[in-house]
Length: 338
Ligand code: PEP
Ligand code: MN
Image (cartoon, rainbow, N blue to C red; front, side):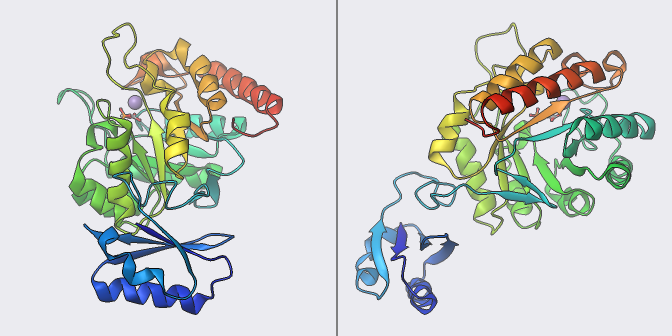
């Protein structure tokens, strides 16, 4: 349940409610809004204790959160969360472009790509150093050497860096190099990993599981939030359906839906979502029109030579065209996501 404080409630009154929640053996999660504070009360049968709070000074209303996800819900926090990725705001007024190769392959290609995408207006460099590949015989990534190259590219360009972590034991290593940890589609329900990134003190880009419902995705976010990490960015990256003419079916319904259900920022990955470079630009634009607050796109200087996901990677010309058209779309919609 959530305890909504009156807008004139004093800080001491909020603290008194928090203390009472703890005395009862439940867990308080305070959200301080511009207008009023809200205290989430987490615990199996929290709502059964509502009478303990109704008469405390400053309490305006007690609301049962009906959704299975609590901290991720709009009921808990009506205003949008803006995630600060080392100074780049995700979920604010600007649509944030994240771009780079699927995998970090070598120094030359990474720096070339990073310089190009930065020049075109991207703010965050993507690139996998630990790759979760469907086949154990495919390129698995450069590991820590790849993370070092990402850190070098950040120094050279000013881009922030996002990279995937695939194992709980690697979280602190990856977190020491990147600005945002990526949890991939194949790990969305790896609860040990979710808890570990929840404790890592870095923002998390949480991909939707390719066979997961929106509710399961938000519950995965709840695992991270409930460890105390509020900086979660959700990423729609396509789901499995009966359609087999594209790699996945990019579910753009989920974008406005999740924005209704949750306060967390939503971004879209049209590269994994389509599997074909020629579909990436139109679906990227469609995603922004649907309300996506950012995009994550694979870019490679020579896609035909890429060690992973070349078929869905944009070359430099195609990325430049996407950025031009994205700018025009944003101008036409006054720079605001729909
Ligand atoms: C990727 O971003 O390269 C990737 C592997 O993503 P996903 O987990 O969505 O497949
Ligand atoms: Mn990829």
